[in-house]
Length: 84
Image (tube, rainbow, N blue to C red; front, side, top):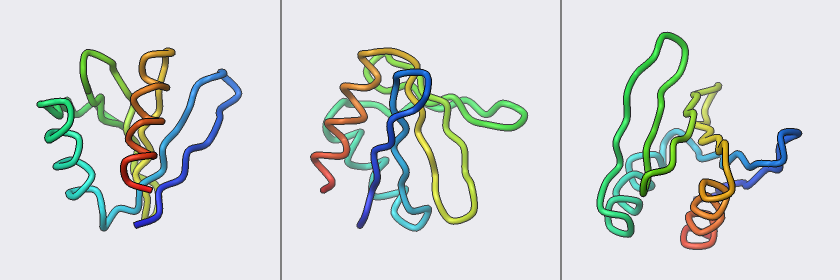
């Protein structure tokens, strides 16, 4: 599995995950943080991990989890380290 952590112009991070691996990633998040909550919006999904909200968008064959705060950046970095 190859994930990629990308710095954004907002100063936060996006974690790109191959679509085929998303179920594995979801299970790994549940094992580490206890929950993976999501709520579908019109054009994207909001994902909550350990109290932090992420925008989740599927593009082509990848899912991007986009952080909006420092706690979210830390979570995405830890997920990337765990999977890498």
